[in-house]
Length: 543
Image 1 (cartoon, rainbow, N blue to C red):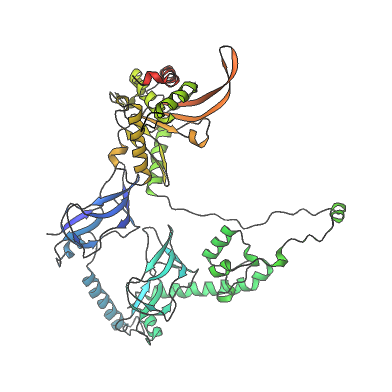
Image 2 (cartoon, rainbow, N blue to C red):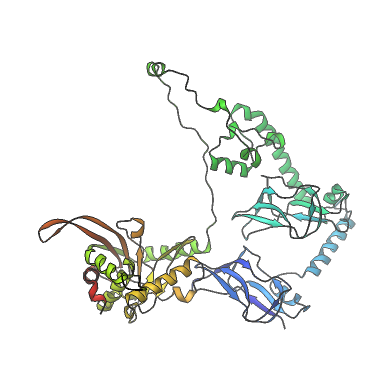
């Protein structure tokens, strides 16, 4: 019996997931434990394995699409099994029924006379529409055509590169034949389901195919809108053609404008090769500044000095870009926003003498197969200080405060999409080298998107270190449900006073952000004093 597989909840905060890659396709045999897909959550991209055996009969969420938890992801069952009931239960119509509905619609349309041209599309001819390549895509821009009219197309060939609201993606053909018609030129944008191309046998009457409106999914209202749009674009192009030489308006495709802005090219100096002089992508790519546009140095210094130079105002084209927020970015915004606006933060900063820590680290790292960082030493010191100050190792629960008897250290790690916080469990029971090994392993998994949700849950205290970027001091937002987070700055050499004399010393600033609901100022200060003692005397952490 077929099994419905829904979008899994792969983390405690996951509300929706994006299918990054399908590793199986419809028709493939699936064994229990096989990796079906890689799914991007709000924290990482994770492999999702099958708990069922059979044949992959249906894929409900395409690569790159995002869907809420529990949305139909796939169906696995016996080869040839009827899954129409399962699809109907999820709001979908089986393909065969859709075909019958389409035929019924065509017949009805012909009988009522709503369409004057009802010729059927010839056998083997396919009308390719602008695809919906992301869940939020409403229109797409053809960045590049990789096939031209007259070219042979095989199933799986890349037809074009299409720019969506999320990325520029390759669009492959699901049909074989001749590319008979291109409906959207390079640099032009059109709504989803607009006619992108026609593929079929050589010699096909393309006009008849395009006019077979019921078969290509058009309707009278859509046609009216298309005619209005074409009239508007024609008027706009004629206006722009008349005005481009006056410097008032320039007619260019959205992609051409974007590329020109990126390259710093003034569109007023570019000649368009598109319809009605429209500037398209290749015009920008082939643009060469003319000598006439170069500044002239023919005036002598004396002439320049004697003349009053007119004020030259900066010119340019304003621009901006909307970038789709990833699931991780949205999760970070939600979590940190909730923390900042719900927990009353206060901050305490101390400066720590790092001379002994530097000397001790050199001695420790001189041992075979040993590598300890200053961050490892800070993590160990924090874990030991939390043991002495349990008030900092707490969680606010409204009517109660939870005192955590275990010490799990969260370590903030920067990744390409944002920030994740792997957790070193029972850090107070680990030695320096063990902490170092755990952090290295977890950070590597995080950056490679292979970290599991369990490895990012359960922290009771967090450390964020920007010292390696040269940041002297900073404040962090508490990683709830923690009551505090430590911000670690860079180690710097500077004049310090020791034994009444000014000498060169190494210091590091630490800033503790506290939730005032659970940690008072005096408690936070005492914690930092203990922390300083451990860091300035590393031998105390080796016991």
